[in-house]
Length: 79
Image 1 (cartoon, rainbow, N blue to C red):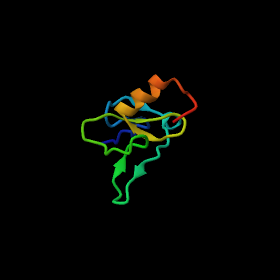
Image 2: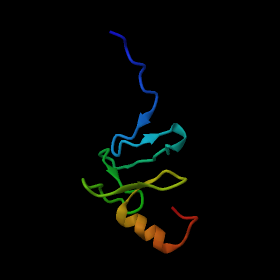
Image 3: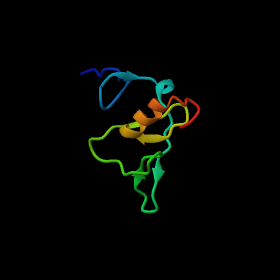
């Protein structure tokens, strides 16, 4: 029996599409004193099933509600 060469492509675990290292973004998680991750903007806890987004280029992780507020403010220089 011969072995097949392993796949050299990395796939996204959520969507299964191929990803490249240069496409990845660093993330900065804001934590409480209890080491829980919270939204960098409103400091609210992340809840299962709610979108968490990474802001480019700073890498802060924010909740879906706050990203809508950031987008609607129109201030591109503010995270």
